[in-house]
Image 1 (spheres, rainbow, N blue to C red):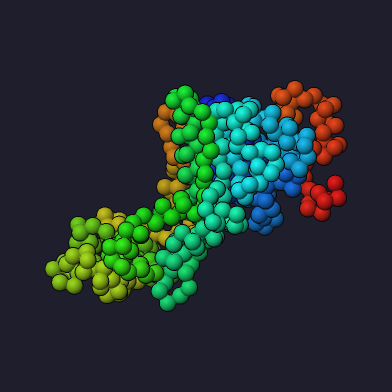
Image 2: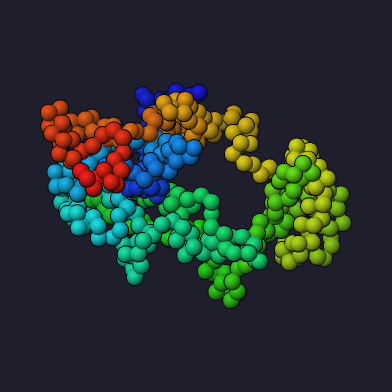
Amino acid sequence: MKAFQAAARCPLDGVRVLDLSRVVAGNMVSLLLADFGAEVVKIEPPAGDPLRDWLVAGVATNWKVYARNKKSVCLDLRKGEARALLLKLVDTAHVFIENFRPGTLEKMGLAPDVLHARNPKLVIVRVTGWGQTGPYRHKPGFGTLAEGASGFAALNGFADREPVLPPIQLADCTSGVYGAFATLVAVREVEVGGGRGQVIDLSLLEPLFSFMGPQAASYQASGRLRPRTGSRSTTAAPRNAYRTSDDRWVCLSASTQAMTERLFRVIGRADLIDNPRYRTNAERVQHAAELDAIIGEFIARMTLAENLDFFGRAEVTVGPIYDIAQIIEDPHVTAREMVAAYPDEEMGTVPMHCVVPRLSGTPGAIRRAAPGLGEHNAEILGALGLGAEELARLAAAGVIYAGKQRTKKKIAEA
């Protein structure tokens, strides 16, 4: 078990982030910033961030991972006093993250021009499904819809089956990475360029579409839609997943001529190198099914371990297809502490991915566990000059909240 590095110095120390977002995309933005030292203060409603309700075996594992390194202040922003407190916190912040539908922040009296009037250097990250402009801007926009509209699902799966949506929050996480990058660009403009704060319009759709790379250009050039090809590639062959004799799987990619020729030699099929059906990459792509049958038959003779040893000694790019149980036992994963267990009151320990990427001079750190709801009310609001008596009054009035989440029913009754 690893200990939290509470005293670690990180490159974003001193940067304060107010994160009003909920679920994954905004939390991914703030997670990346928090992992490198930013003080991320989650501004949560009385019901808490919905991530707290995403339970696995009764445990909020999503919250434990995405909310690590963060603090929590619970404000009922339907109340004027709560909004006034938020505006005071804005005065102290460098970054403000929200993921309401376009126009919601404005209706709350928290429009960007209001925030910038108080804090001209504030970087405001606005996360939505479709962006702040355009005919879809007011539509609900969960990541699933972006994964469909971006073209990803249309390419994912097999030609004779339905398009396949990803089994992870792909659009949210992609947007989160872009959002963290854009935030640092905007913060640098303020700090180094002497500029003013600005608004970052971050949709879920556009970042994932950018990962589609040359699809639009390829469509214009060919006039053809790229088909769903399962694990095969339309640009290089051989490339696929192959079953081993012990009913496990390996993945193989031979996307260069040299690697393909090495593969053919090691499986005892050097004759394929000069075979006109497989001589060039274009020909191999055209006859990928035939190649898969040849390679698959060879791999199926050996177990997973035997395949990895055989191809590893030949330096052919073959690797295992792991599930999470296998990942956490892999010696490379454990040697690099890609996954490490940290103390957790509920689980005993909670395994989490390491801070990514690894910086040699100014690395990030996992400094604290995910917070309880409103755990840092006294610390954060107390710094505004609110004493214990005033905090108690605000709690009694339902302006602030701490402790277990209130259900929607309890909130309605409050």
